[in-house]
Amino acid sequence: MFKYLRMLGVIALSTLAIFGGSAAAQAAPSTVTILTGFHSTAGVAFSLDGKTAFVVQDDDGTMGGPSSLVVIDTTTLTQVGDAISTGVNGAGVNHSIVMSPDGTKAYVSLGTGVVKPFYPATLTFGPAITVGTAGIGQVVFTPDGLHAYVAVTNNGSGQYVKVIDVVTDSVTATISACSAPDGLAMTPDGLTVFVNCSDGSVQVIETTGNTVLTTFTPTGHLQGTMITMAPDGARVYVTAFAIPTTVTTVIDTTTYTEVHQFTHEPKDVAFTADGTIAYLFSASSGDLVPTDATTFAEGTPIDVTVPSPGDWFLLDKNPVVDQYWICGGSSIRIVGQGSSLADTGANATGVTITTLAGTGLIALGLAVTLTRRRRA
Image (tube, rainbow, N blue to C red; front, side, top):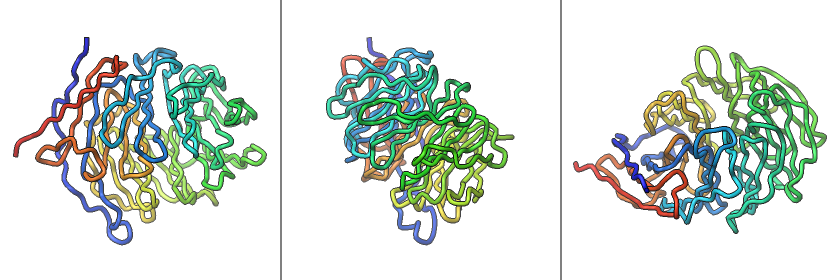
C-alpha cells in the first residue's frame, strides 16, 4: 500500500543578488524544488549530459541493511522505472556514488566495506570489490578514468586508502594513511590526492608512487568528514567537526597553508562550473550559502530546508545546468534557476514542491508528481 508523502509547508524564497565583479555574471539560483517520498538519500551522481541523476538511498538505516538506487530524469524531475534494489544491499553509512570521467561506470560505496560497480547504460551492477570490513568514505576517479581511490573508514577503525583498477575492478594498491580516512579529493592533473581523516588531520598522497607526501592538521579540526577540490585545483575545501562547531578550512594545494575558514557549520561544498562561486551547505541552519571563491565574501543565504543539525547531507552539482542537489533524509532538494528546472508549477514565491509517491523502494516504479500552488 502506497503512502503519499506531501510537504507540510513551503519555503519562502526571493531572487537574490550575490556578489559584485566577475561573480555577478554567474546566474543566481532562485528556485528550490523538493522531491520527497524516499528513505534516507545518501548520495547522487549524474550522467555526463546532466539529464539523469542516480540517487542511492538507505532503506532502513541499519548497517548492511537493504538499499536501492533511484534513477531520476533531471529534466522532468520524475523517477524513471523501478528503484533498483538488487546488488546494493548494505549502504548502511553510505558516503558516495561517483561517476567515472567517461560516464560508463559509477562506483557505489557501501557500509559493508565494498564498492559496487554500476553501469548506467544497462542499469546493472557488477561484482562487489572488497576494500574493507565496514563503512567506506568518499571515492574519487583519476582524470583518465583508469583508477579510483577509496577511503576505507571501517567505521572509525580503518587506516588505508585503496586503489582500484577500473578496467578489472580489482584492488591494485594499499596506502597506509591516517586514522579512519573519510574524505578524498584529487587535483585536476591527477597527481595528488588530499585525504580528510577522522583524527582531524589531512594527508597528501602523490599518485605516481602512491606514497604520502605530507600530513598536517588545520586549525581546530577534530574529526574530518567531507572534502571538495576547487575546479582549478588551486584550493581544497576541508570540512571537519571542531570546537564549538563544524568548520570548513580552505587549503592552498601547493603550499598546504590555510587560506580561509568558514565557521557557520558547513557540511558540504559544491562549485559553479567556472569555479567563481562555492556553495556551502549548512544543515544546522538549513541554508545554502553562496561564497566568492576568491574573496570568500558570503552572499545572501538560500533557505533550502528546516535546520537539521543531526542529519547528514550530501551536495553535488549537475554537470550541465545550474542545479545543486542536496540529499538527506526522505527528500532531495534541488536548487537552481527556474529556467533550468522542470516546469512542474510554482507557488507565489517561485518555489516548486514536487512529491514522488511510493514506499521505501518506490515499488512497482509508480511515480506520481503532485504540484501544490500557493495563491497570491
